[in-house]
Image (tube, rainbow, N blue to C red):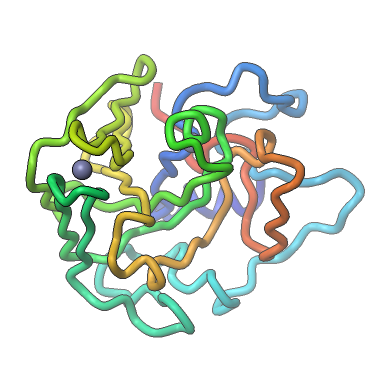
Length: 210
Ligand SMILES: [Zn+2]
Ligand SMILES: [Zn+2]
């Protein structure tokens, strides 16, 4: 909760796409709301450690700050991505403002993977070539994918204007897109062990307006 407040206060914590849709079956803690940081009961709270591995730039200005990538190296730009068949291409001229694991059931079902990692960008920094098919997966969420090979590609939320989230796995530079948080940990598969010390959120990492 405290960390989340920080996220909101500085106005730089974007959202995480992640977890798009609601997660009705998720065992949310009583009183928990989207954006609340997940705190396992009976454990001491982990303090935010600026500079800790994987956290570089997580709460700083999204552009120009030099988000730390693999082994702390600055993210090299532009980033290039493509779907499996190459019909859909993406280029990002700025680094993502956040990179978040998502353990929600919708991402899992849509990709067939046990979890996904979304890189969040300002829409204006991303150019998508080709013609990805866009499909509304819930009231506010539109997911893009290649109509030819089916590669899941993007996530956009009507309530998060000017933002687009791209699967890190489609980027040539995926190594540089180091995750800095986890979304929807209440839906995480129990056999998936990711003890990386990153911030955990019960659902989304930012509350949607309205
Ligand atoms: Zn998700
Ligand atoms: Zn394709």
